[in-house]
Image (cartoon, rainbow, N blue to C red):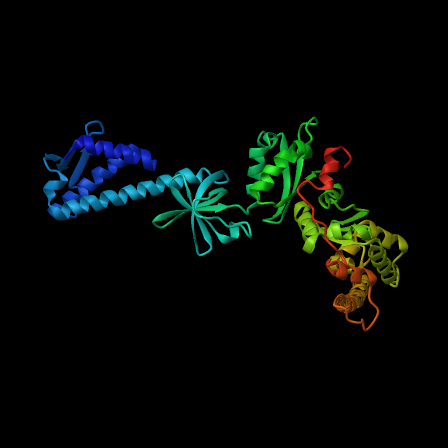
Length: 457
């Protein structure tokens, strides 16, 4: 056996596979012991021992402590094959252990890899000699990579599964954007600016609430960068995903107001018992507050931790008046009591029904009978209101469909069979959407953040 050549191979494997050299030497020693046991057909695990000189590569095999001058070649074909199999298996085990240890320390780190192929929807990526995969659930919707494309992603998890190590990658996880901000915004990496809360719908929109521990550093402005340079790099990496950066505030009311930007909020009523915020916006701000398919209010709710209801002033006033009139039918309930409930954020019969009698007894200092009667009255009224709301919704939808069809006939040059809404007809003729409410496209540097940067927010 050429000891020098064997040592060079050991050193090469240790370097290329990131395995400790001493472990490989122990593997060779164990393989030699296994070959000897196979050759002499013994089951005694203590009968043979082997030591290898790490400098010269010479192996010393002993049987019951007595030296034996034998090499794997001297054992014959079957025993030598055993030596080879044991050596390969232990090398693989060491490599798997090394890979698991290395990548376990890198969970949450952004890495760059090379896309290889798709397997069952999962993207296989090579990262530092290791093969990792990105499940469909961790991919950004609509994003597609070709073989040999560079992929920037985050190590989400590392699992030791049987004979292999599974490295799970992600581009859809919220922490991926946090890590991108740490790369692009030095103040975030240095913890001068802190990302206090975050909500993301991967591929569509993300909201971040940021704060600064240094009064001289504007958290929002630093994250956006000069002329949007910093945020642009992140948006480009995410293929155009919109990012809204809002200023963090310990006050829930101010934070909710900030999180709903670019919509302007007229009034906010918080109900701590229900964890619900009733937000009143003008009719012309309703579209912005709700967002496309409810995205803006949904992300704002996740960002702030509050269940957010968006109402127009008319809807809010109607709900409060209904609650007042319903509760004041109960004997012993005064206007001051209903005012107190409104101040506590309970602004509709639905809220009264949901909080239950115990809260009313505590907050209004009324007996159980009155509290239960208040809840019963509110529950009965809530059913009536819900039925009326459903009926109004169906009628509005029916009217909208009829007007849309009439506008479409007008566009086709047919005579309308009834009255046509002028705005819908104009929209149809101009090729615009027939929906009565048009959602504006809000980009990563929207008016709200621009105003914030300029000191107008």
